[in-house]
Length: 222
Image 1 (cartoon, rainbow, N blue to C red):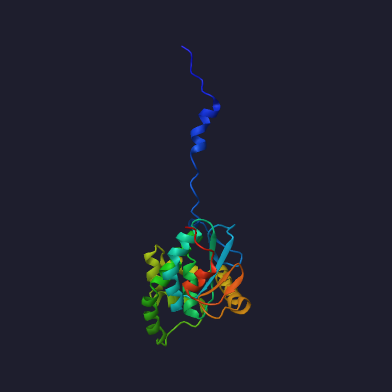
Image 2 (image 1 turned 90 degrees about the vertical axis):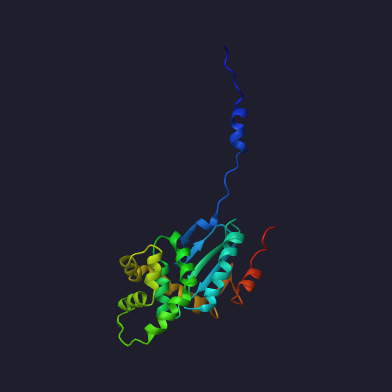
């Protein structure tokens, strides 16, 4: 009995017809040269930089309103990349910024959004803490004390981090260096006028709301 031999072109046809799955660029998060967390396609034509302060209520409102549409409508398909940078305003903001960087870069966006989503709760505890006269004076012990007594450590514990890991994040000299470099860049070089602040392809956006920022981004494909 003769074997039926099929042309190689026919054998290859089904594989050729199977399209490769589209890349979900939201899952790609890396640390930029200045220390920001960049989410998205590195070759995106539109590059958005967000400058945030974790003690800024306007930032919390912006992140709550803009995170989902930015990811689903702009970043996921690869047309826009988003880089989050710090514009630190005080020691409490610095504590939160150091904690947001705990874990791998892939953990950052979840940490970042959780800190803002729970901002009211830990800021309320912060007001009580601020009235306490007994505080460490050295920087790292002081930042650890803030984290432990304002609910920030408790919040990060729920995200799977131990207190020992959080202490290490607070004391990380590389993180501290990068946060301070981003802060200097934001206020003194980019010259943002407040937080949140934005640049799109290097041009500062005048305004701090999602509606204003969205108008500066490319139209969403329908």
